[in-house]
Amino acid sequence: MSATPYLIHFTETGSPEIGFIASTQLAQNIPFVIKRVFWTYGTPTGVLRGQHANRATEEVLIAATGSIRVETDNGKDKQTFVLDDPATGLYLPAMCWTDLHFAPGTVAVCLTSTDFEESDYIRDYPTFQRLAAHPAL
Image (cartoon, rainbow, N blue to C red; front, side):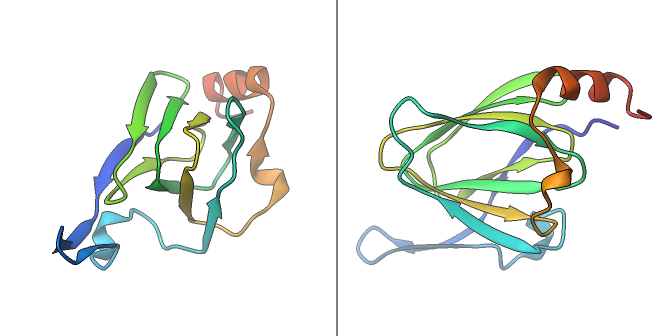
């Protein structure tokens, strides 16, 4: 099974005069129960982040500030997304390879369906390609 990444638009309230709040209050926007939240910041220019897939973990990635160019590969399709709006997240299904290119000063927030478990990570792209092509392995 290879699900496809897609953008999620969060509920947003506020105005330019007072600022904005984006929320996951409408839980149906997130296709899983959130088990963990983490944030990434201080990524030096030119450093490629991500470079892995998760066997079971689903994620929603948000650029809280700045922007991230996200290259995805679910084993069938490759897509590129640009996250530059804190009211928009990117759903990343399990078994989806990601390469993340951070603009300077970007802070990313990630919501996940599982707690961290190193054995869930596939960090070798040829191994991911083999597993994506033959899910029974």
